[in-house]
Image (tube, rainbow, N blue to C red; front, side):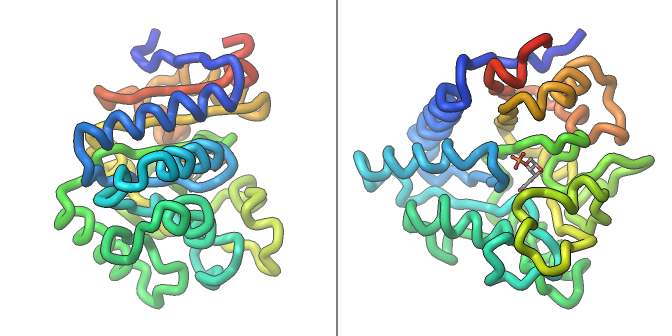
Length: 242
Ligand code: F6R
């Protein structure tokens, strides 16, 4: 039915270890790898494991570049629930990646179109994404590309679906954002490699739908069927029944 073959790991820990191994092996091939990084609960352990690698071999990440996949719009950048705060805490700070090797949407950019254009220009100047790390929303979103009748191809301001506004990252936001800034499917699909991580029983249903789905904007993750180099790692909890 599909070429998207999940690699099923026994546990979320095993999945995260395999993800970290893949990132490190790509870094050895290309030390200046541009990693596009999702936030949220799924990749956190993978990022922690990269810190272990960094401690063992500090030079490993000296040239790695990072691009933030998405951001909640109009949440102050300093708010602990932003993707920015997450990446600073889990990836950029621990691995010593400073502003010269990093770009990400500004949640408070007054002109969202100009902000998306700025990120696209940065990405083009950097030569494209080497590895894009993705999680999947329970509604099938990738980044903040939400299900709908159509998908804007490029980086854009997305109107968030209600279930996305209930994302646990936003639990402490006094007002939950209504919009997000996200790379579009075009930027994601132009990545040389993609790593999709899916873990936990809560993702079982959407993983089953993804594997059986045709390519449709009603399930943005289904566009991954079009990419020639996707690694889909999941844990047994998510895979059960699939
Ligand atoms: C966050 C992002 C989102 C999450 C998705 C799953 O940067 O891009 O698409 O990957 O909402 O979130 P978790 O991993 O928290 O279940």
